[in-house]
Image 1: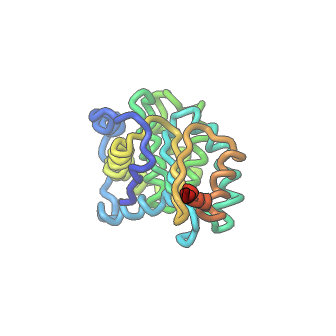
Image 2 (image 1 turned 180 degrees about the vertical axis):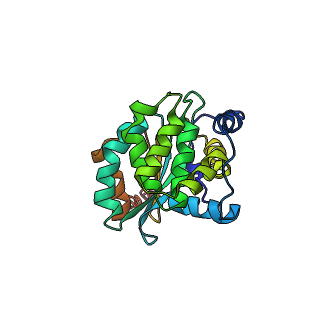
Image 3 (image 1 turned 30 degrees about the horizontal axis):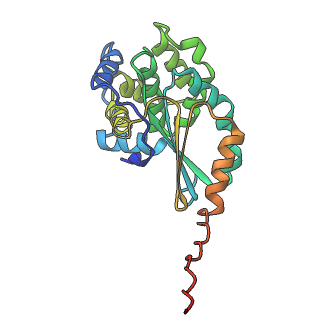
Length: 242
């Protein structure tokens, strides 16, 4: 599993009950038929599905986000689309989505599972876009899981596999692992962005406007900042002879 660098740390540890509480909320209902995929294969496909862009890209954008966070929605429906067009689709950057479903957002974990389970079938980013675009409709609603299923149907997913994945929490270990990595990196809120490249690392927080994001991206693409030339050593004048 890809890890978040602790060099990008902010200042808050996530409570130890985050994952277990959220996971319990997503496990209601009768068990679906077993998936034809092995757990390892399913998790690997889900993990790969939330990476977007060319492997050769110069910059990896790690986004730490919560599908029920309004600031994450603002980013996803504005700046993200511009980044996708200007940097990801042009091969200069790729993006990795890390889940941090906050306990204050009752449907965030279920939404994360819907996205990750869609990712098993190669549709993470399509579900990502649908979840953020409709966040005001399902956020905090008791029937959110049914709405997520309708989104899966609209995306023409295999519904038996999707239901098995969500009802039986097949991708929960990945989501819990994401939250633990965020805790290790002391990430203190969502959205949080870590820009990794050979030329260095930058971090941004909040619903950053595209202009600010582009400025940081372009600086990393341009290369490492040259250090100022060292000042010449100061010498004292030689003493004069009497």
